[in-house]
Length: 129
Image (cartoon, rainbow, N blue to C red; front, side, top):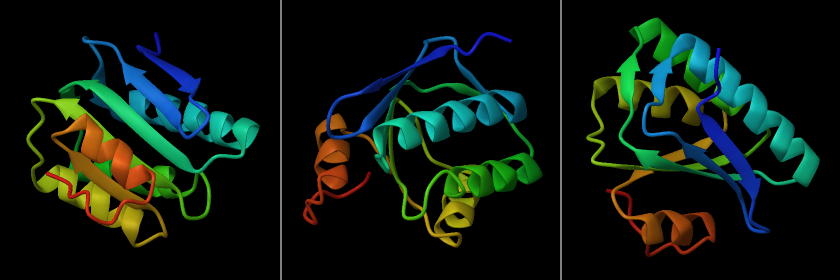
């Protein structure tokens, strides 16, 4: 399976750039969270910014729940800012976000890349959306 994403450390966060053909599935998320966990450990960083075009998604509610659990297990207190151009959060998004939050992760979806970066930097005035 191709990963369809790249990881880089910016000095402030781990940046995950998903390819235009990235599809959210149980398997792609397992691969993604494993790579993010390695990068977070290597760089001693718990701030992650995921960017790209709104991906296709093939996940059941159980898959979304499990993905939220996997994301939260990456590191205590992990912060995930997700900016997908054109993405409209829905009930599956909320389930993923709430599952991760209930396990100690902070996850927000953003419609503006600058707001996502500001949120990761600790700017309380930056609002998701």
